[in-house]
Length: 231
Image (cartoon, rainbow, N blue to C red; front, side, top):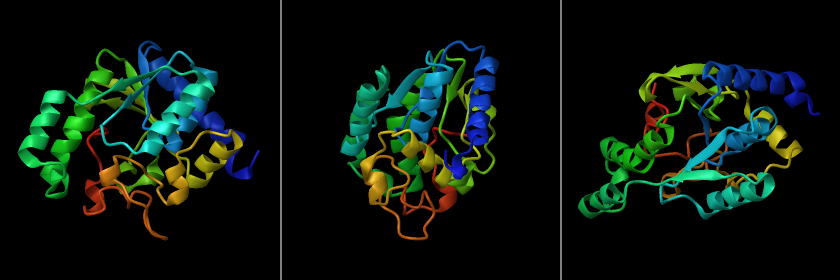
């Protein structure tokens, strides 16, 4: 095993998962999967710890083809059943009729509106009735995530338990694990996309840029969240 992904690193993530599941009463807990490399690592860890955890994903209608390819590869690798949640048709049609297809680039308010319809509202349905959810968030990803804890009470979603097992992992640890375990990572990662969201809102980054510089690149760093992880 590589020195950069020691057994202690994996054990710490597994301990967070186990403790978080216990705090959530180990009942109806779901893993939110955006098919990032971090999410693939967490899913692989869950296969050994808690295979009963359901996996859900949000199809915004604007994901990259390569992202759908990762979803299909996961089905083949693990035999997963992925619960997909889509935007409400009426709200999405109204947005596009009234403001067009790219209103999110006109203002932060418009971008938040688009994210709410395509991501936040579907997440609310995905979390309804759950006692907890699991994410692949890491502190090193951006300034907006510096304060993450391994186990949190998610007040924004009714006080359910939120579990972030990879909070202290850096990029090297994540990628070493993914390589060692032959995870089906998104092809866009090798093309300069460290963080992948909707296609119109994601670009490759330049050398030396922040990991999330390619997300909503026309906005200030402190605004680069979509509302899924309200704090």
